[in-house]
Image 1 (cartoon, rainbow, N blue to C red):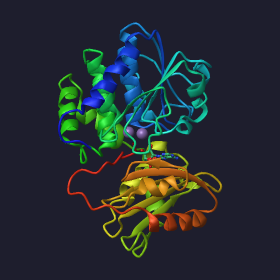
Image 2: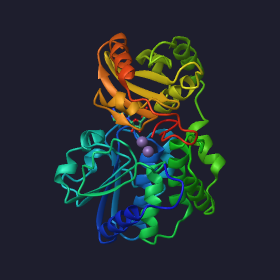
Image 3: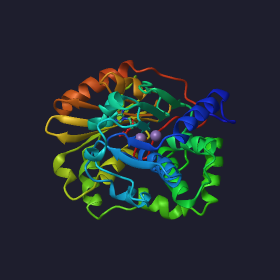
Length: 348
Ligand code: AMP
Ligand code: MN
Ligand code: MN
């Protein structure tokens, strides 16, 4: 999270990344699995700009098969292709909002076969797995870094590109609740192109099918509060079972943690989402001082200090037991009076 200006080293990284992209004829842009608006919006914004410059461009992600419904409107040029249509040996691969190679899912092997790999990301846990890196853990969203890159490429901003970037900012800052001054300045530039902020936000975060309401009733009804957990700071948790997911989209499932995290008695919120029997995708959120990315890392996951995730096998009780232990040992920072480095209403 930064308050003023852009670090000179970052300008250099953006210039180097721009030189790499400026000469590229064929670019494959990939987002992390289960892409959110920052991952896919960033990929599409950069993809649109390169497409307009005449490059052959494709945007993809390892899972799920379909693009999340709320993000489909961002792909105005039809750049998204399935993983099967990503070349086995891409020319230039650009990985966006992706902290580690394995977060690319079935596209991870392209990191090994591509001629060059540019990693553009803001995760604290980024493993710098590419050949070129534009990584800034202080940035509120990958979209902010993409705009720096577009500036270095001297791409004029238009509304479709700006809308993709704005979508990333909205979700990764929880509707600008945790946006630093630079991010607000970026948002102002994006809005100046004609982006309809209200419409973008409604589509991304405020539109759910009716089935969301009974799903929430069940899932929130089984939430539990453990005041003594997390070093006495409190843990609130719930599960979203496969049976609860019938008739709702990934958007509805990802929304649960944003409600659970509002619990005033708990520093940390955890939502265990059942991917298949005895396999869980877990979302962690902290309010102020517990580093949940460290707890997630103990399970092989990652993320940001205040928003992280991991996948784990076993019963829900078993995963929770391990999670309590990890949170008991998780680093505790001094609460920061200003914005946290959180990712995401749906994530990051
Ligand atoms: P989520 O809870 O899915 O919204 O994710 C919160 C943050 O944790 C995001 O920055 C994700 O990129 C990251 N994250 C989620 N799941 C994983 C995982 N299995 N491995 C690494 N990072 C993850
Ligand atoms: Mn993300
Ligand atoms: Mn992000």
